Amino acid sequence: MQDVFLYLAIVLSVIIPLPFYRVLKGPTIFDRLLGASAIGTKTLVLVCLIGFLYGRIELFVDIALAYAVLNFIGLVAVARYFQSHPKER
Image 1 (cartoon, rainbow, N blue to C red):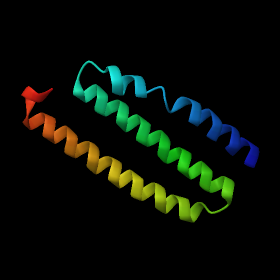
Image 2: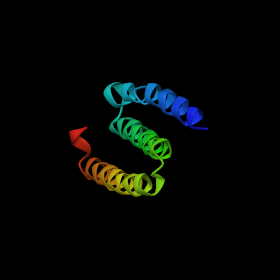
Image 3: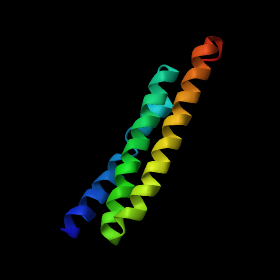
Image 4: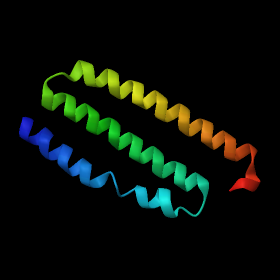
């Protein structure tokens, strides 16, 4: 079963840079925020898979939850900023 988690982690590591194109070349700031959110979500899953591989899922789930909260708050803050300052896009 650990081999499955290892292969999933490798595939996910290869897939994570794909939304980075949207972050760099997005036509609008909100497309860029969506790409950053996708990267954050994939990173959360990767952290949980690493927890399964090391056999310490309880530790890595706590790290993933903290990262999820920071990711969400950061993206909402940036989206609110650009929503209230439309000339800076």
